[in-house]
Image (cartoon, rainbow, N blue to C red; front, side):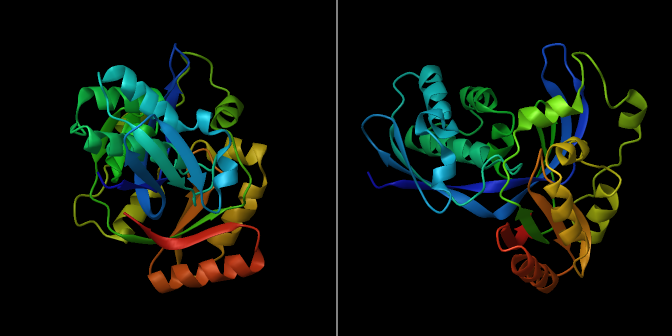
Length: 294
């Protein structure tokens, strides 16, 4: 059987509200998630035992393959589905790790899609959905790999009709651990950050056909609640945001997820590419991608 290939597209949180921390310690979120046109590539050679090799410019940052979310997702699916066919995974790693863009989650989701194809499983198979959430909070939305309003701990997904938005993504090559950012946020078990009044006043997302201007107008009213605690942990995030916000043609700039990657939405692809070139020139050590979100 020929090798199977899937892309793990970068996830970008256009907004991220932390509703509160549940009694079990998990955080309830509400986030508009988009996906970028940059991605890791995962290949599956069917047959034999489960294994993973990593290549690509950022392979060294993946660490021990035994701890990789690709392997974790595959093992969990093996436990959930009797006689699951496996094989050898090869990951071409181009997305930064611990970067707030779900690189590891996107890779795990790509692995689940590959195993679903190999084993004739539907993507809405409840076993696949359960394994996705058990692998990580961002894996269910990455499994779908399309724009969604994500709520709960990541398990509730409402597809959205986003326009294609020119963007620049920037990471200062400083890893930021999600658990450290939530710890800095400092919510106690059972504590709410967003009250019922805030939920009732939350803006409605634009309908299908909404323009970039329509979306930016609404997103400006809904922040990323993890931006402030992440800035306290890694102040360089402020430098990234300043570089993006001072670019010509920028419509909205903020941090994605728990950082340190930040993004900016632009009015035109030309503005986005010009901004990216300027940032690469001024900060040659940073990871910079100019493309689109959708």
